[in-house]
Image (cartoon, rainbow, N blue to C red; front, side, top):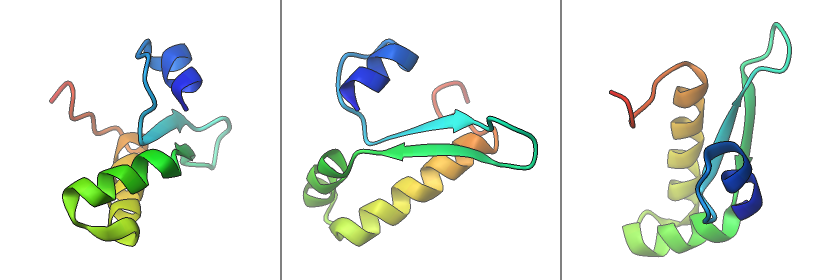
Length: 72
């Protein structure tokens, strides 16, 4: 995940989730999740692993739908 984050976002660290635009018509896009990072975050947030994973899935889908928390 660190390599992907560096390649696509210019950030030199492992991130929790990356979302990518749809490679073809009729699909929403692609999500790449980093379970070790998500597990670590789950311990910090207290959501538990399933809760954190659910949060990240919603987060990623929102990005694929065009929402961007860094710009808005």
